[in-house]
Length: 91
Image (tube, rainbow, N blue to C red; front, top):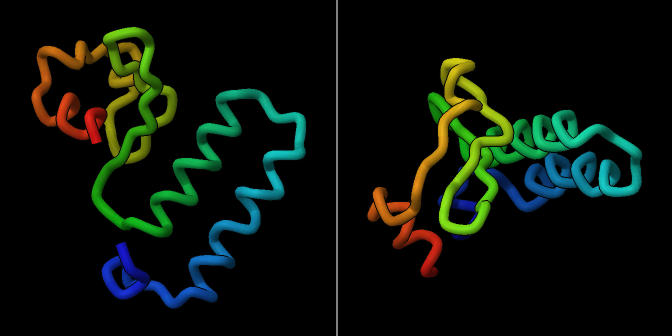
């Protein structure tokens, strides 16, 4: 994806990513680290809602959400039951 597709200049993209890179050296709880990562991704790819998912064997597990109900964090998504997730993971 080019910066034109994202809608940001390279400088603005770098400005969004620098705090994320700085966070790598900080001792942060996983929940806070995931929230900051999701915030950065939302600034690069705006939308109504987003979730950061972790692959646990054959299941996707939400670790951070924005714009979704809190109960989403308790859900599990078997990749085999969701063809779009399977296709994304294959790539």
